[in-house]
Image (cartoon, rainbow, N blue to C red; front, side, top):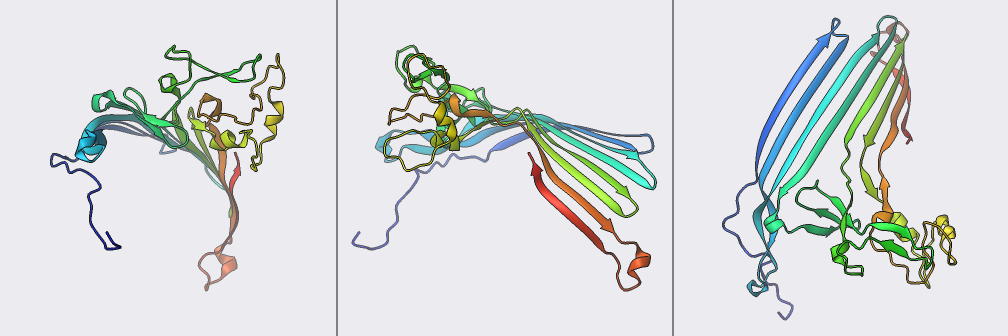
Length: 295
């Protein structure tokens, strides 16, 4: 265009687009016992979302490859609960709080059951009948002791590694998450400890994928576990041989357990009594805090 500005369409229009629609159902229960020393809250929910906005393939003769359309259906359901207790009350006080969330999501419908794959380095995918973002990769069965090469499951039975061999090998969605808090106080001193946890989720270790890629003329540093690589027939190890063109295909070899328990925050504080502060200072607190202390 001889350096002149211009306008061009980036998407084909769709006059039939509608808003995504969600139907929500919630039920809750609040319980207090022993003069409010124990308080329990429980809530369950079910959310069905229809007309999800996704790309639909169109013939290339239109000048485009996809069009935005209302195609999918998604269900989110779960249970959340919390419990707060006053364990000791008086000159010395101790309170506890626990909260947990159980959530499940599932893709119910996509356009012609066509999956959305290859999202991110972990080859995440959106598939009917599965949660959002599952890891859709090759299933690694280990290292062949006779050759030193990775063995991948031949899912379609064609005798070679192809897209038909990809399958769901992990789920980044946790079974439950939560937090646990304890507060201790005595004569102006207070100790607060907060723990955070997640259980049942997988992670794709992308760092490990590249930090174990043994290639010729590579200037990248490697992890020490490459020293355990296969070297001769009969070696039984989890690391393949060094061949200079190491294939780093995304596979279950890099899927790891993502469950954790973390000391998210620990705080020790002291509040000075009013008789020490006098009439010109309303409140004074000194504290020391640690965050992400231990995982």
